[in-house]
Image 1 (tube, one colour):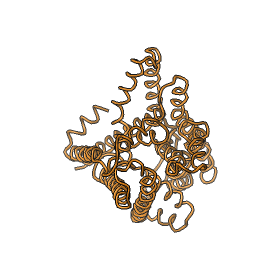
Image 2: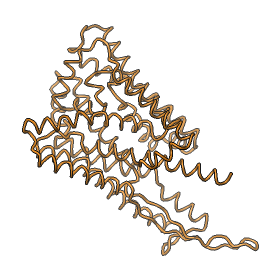
Image 3: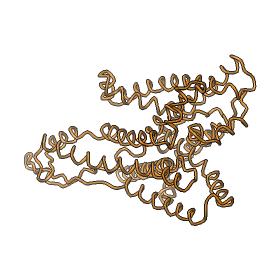
Image 4: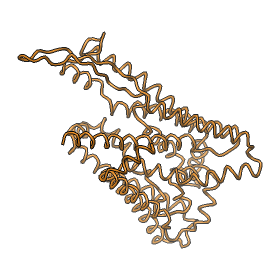
Length: 418
């Protein structure tokens, strides 16, 4: 990874992209110290330190919620809007046709996602502002409106920031913002671990075992993220005029975890939604019931989390890899899988292989995401977001380095042609 960054830094074009990405992330962290007016931040911090869904929400936002900055809602509304648009693309034929139109269609869907993000952010901001009236320094319609507009604008600005990174920088902007949010909590997490050891809540042996476990998990995540099944493809020989074409061997790389960390991000957002919504109505008995049963780490929310990770892994894999299209392209160019007839048998073979790989990847993601919750409950330490955060951090880091490598390879190839 360090060698890749060093080599990329030597290329002027990539150096500009890296500097632009770092500048945009610096703007994000700069905004993380800009407070929302009329908020008693000491009371908010006390509520967050009690744990629960708000404590987890604070981890996702990189401490922006406990400090109640302009980025208090983080990028969560955008993630939820993206989930809704992806689901609607399969349900509404007009959106499905739009998605197949190429670049223009994707631009239109991206625009609809932006509108949906602002609407969801506004709704969430209104609910959040009404639910925290007790921590407002001044209770009035004006103060609630100011808080609502400020945090909605903060989310909209984060969405714009992420898109700028994606277009002009390195990596996926939204993923990098979440990556930086989680990384920014690392120093406080280490300090908390040291405090646990100091007061005797956590003994040295448990801490050493936890560090070993973290290293093993990181190695496993890298292995699974990089692991793939290579389907051999043979191209038939064709004679055109006096020349012979084809007769080459190739392969189709099918990754174990085709979806990356996207299912984990989506699943955590959906799992948090019921308890987050219930927290807006503290006086309601139904809301309290939902908040109790769907709190992070509870059996119901954990089972829901596992099921959503598996479901979103299959869903996102179905979007990114279409066996029918792959089989048709192979057939069009005279390619075939040895031992498998072209056409429908190839589609069935690819589907069967993809389903097995996806199941393995989905179970692995769910296991890594949930295991720290179980270990935390047994050891009596707070690891609410350990596995999920680790998956996101490692996954985003790998994807960003891969993008750097691919851009370096493309530039070297272009230079060779020139």
